[in-house]
Image (cartoon, rainbow, N blue to C red):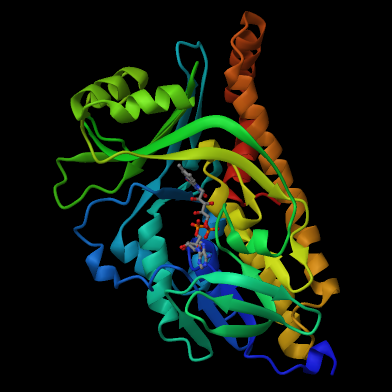
Length: 408
Ligand SMILES: Cc1cc2nc3c(=O)[nH]c(=O)nc-3n(C[C@H](O)[C@H](O)[C@H](O)COP(=O)(O)OP(=O)(O)OC[C@H]3O[C@@H](n4cnc5c(N)ncnc54)[C@H](O)[C@@H]3O)c2cc1C
């Protein structure tokens, strides 16, 4: 029997229902393909539980390009009705340096540069939309424990004991991706020697819809604006503070008041004093890129394919662009009855995404190295470069458009 006519349980099984896997399932909802989505965590509760709850410490700066994808998937309004925070300005500077850059949406006649969205809000909005898709089975919670990536069909064994066969398996199971390992994908990876501390903080002064980032000797600190809860008098930001592991350990161990003081000092009192901090979480940062995105009947998307330093807030945006590209090539399957694991189709997806993801990763690595170097000439070069960008509107506007995912 040919691969195209093999009887399988599903045409496509998506493993991982985080922001990227859930978006993938929605992007394929009208494809006519028989779909299953599985995750080791249960399907998220309804959006109403989020309203009024504490901020999720994991947030993503979502570009207008990603917003457009959410809009086309019919989930952006649910996110907006829940809690998203627009930002119109971005201020980047070097600690103790003499240069900074200000990016402003008005400079390119755009209403916003992007939105800060809690990961929990993104996922809950998409899970809610997934509940009503007729051609989709949500198998949650369930984890994949074995894979037979055979020529006729891939067979997944779940920890529930069930076996599923699929013509195509999409791995969206995150940076550690057990499926990537089961399928034997090779990766190129190295440690950034940074840990990211994330939490939500209350500040004295309002953020004025400005995302702020400061490059310091020992790392990078970002203050991302959050929508004020009911009480307009309170000013909240989500922070991502990437530092060497030893510093991270001492910051994590500090009592709250000491941590707030350290944060106020490191941010040079940008928003006055930090007066409150939520529970802190830390993530080890590792750059990882799969050498190939396709292996027979398994294809990688999102962090399963690439994970990068959060300093430019691009990880989820790159994953959402993967979703768009893979959905575009799979749209041809419906019309032609082609095998969704057709190597020609999947090679097109890889050709489309891999160079782009690679160049973003190289850029982040370059930034991280540039700012880790302290010799005077390098410091001078950094400041001169920053000033040059700040004083060249054309170049600055190109950079803004690239960061927004809207350049040609
Ligand atoms: C500190 C920090 C700040 C960041 N800030 C930004 C930002 O501002 N902007 C941005 O664009 N990106 C940002 N990122 C990156 C972004 O969070 C990730 O790129 C994004 O979450 C990747 O989504 P994903 O769905 O690929 O993976 P994940 O979010 O990791 O989801 C993977 C899913 O797979 C499931 N899973 C795992 N193993 C199995 C298994 N064996 N079986 C079944 N299910 C499984 C998990 O339960 C999970 O639901 C940041 C990352 C970090 C660490």
